[in-house]
Image (cartoon, rainbow, N blue to C red; front, side, top):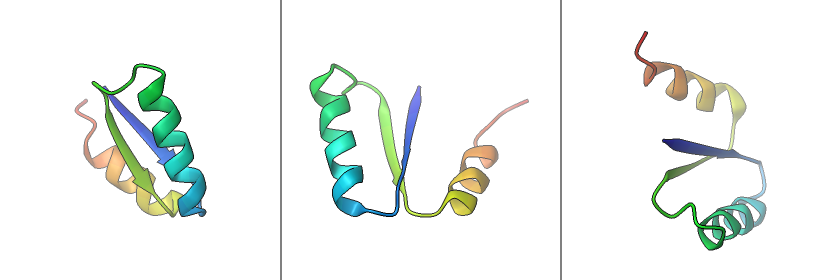
Length: 49
């Protein structure tokens, strides 16, 4: 399973990523992105219908 973090603040992305890992989500693929459009394009490319 993948978790996608989207925020324009690098500090906030790092805080969220650290919080997720501390909450036990370290086995998940946690990815970061700064722009929503690019993120959704990349996410949609990975979806298999």
